[in-house]
Length: 66
Image (cartoon, rainbow, N blue to C red; front, side, top):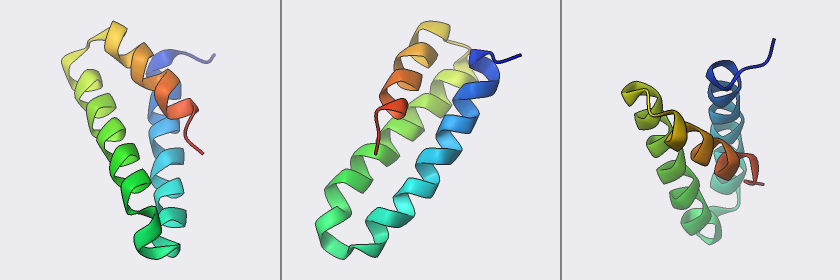
């Protein structure tokens, strides 16, 4: 069964893999990489704090990352 508690970590991993693409394009990708990394950090913080509202918020943000 898919839950926020299982899907948010998967989305974080997907976005961590996405960071590799931004690394590959060099300095042009630095801003996008920084933004995604910040969102990942805040999502992980929400998980640690057990803040479901923030978890939902960052889950949606991370889903939009390409």
